[in-house]
Structure formats: C-alpha cells, structure tokens
Image 1 (tube, rainbow, N blue to C red):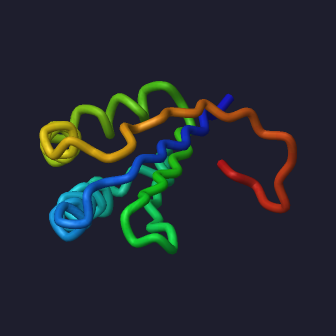
Image 2: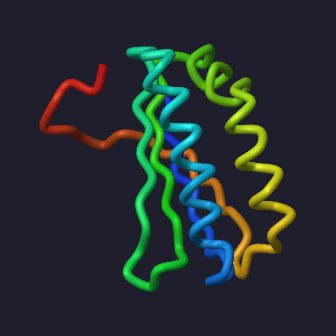
Length: 103
C-alpha cells in the first residue's frame, strides 16, 4: 500500500525565495532520478509564505530515496535554521477515494 504525506509550514517573508530555490533543487534531483514510485509536489499558499508539500510514495523504500537526497537534507537543514514562523507539521494521510489510479 502506498503512503501519502502532507507537510505545511510558514517561512519568514525574507526566506521565501531561498526556500523556493532549495525546493527546486530537490525537484530537479527527483526528476533526474525519475523514480515512478515518488510523486511529490510543493505549493505556495495565497499568503506568499505558507508552503504545502504533498508526497505520494508507492512503497516505504521510495520515501527513503527522497530522504536520502543531499538536496533534500540541505532543504530541511536550511529551513530549520531559518526559524520558520510556523514550524513544519507532518500529516500522514489515508486515502478515502480517488478518481484515478495513484500507482
């Protein structure tokens, strides 16, 4: 069974651009790896500083691939060091229904 994870946090306004840059590096690495067991997107809320990450992992191993990326480790470390206004909140989600096959 796959795993769905949602993470939400708010950065300081002055950190938004750097956070976007770090996220782009992670996404670039994921595209390069091209693991079909990882579906990961990040969204920015209307307030311009609240980020919402949504990830689907086909198997536990797929999440380990993301967590093992150097770019992901840098993203996490720099986000923590920036002192977010609202720290990351992780929600593990259970699927109720879908209009498409997720994996």
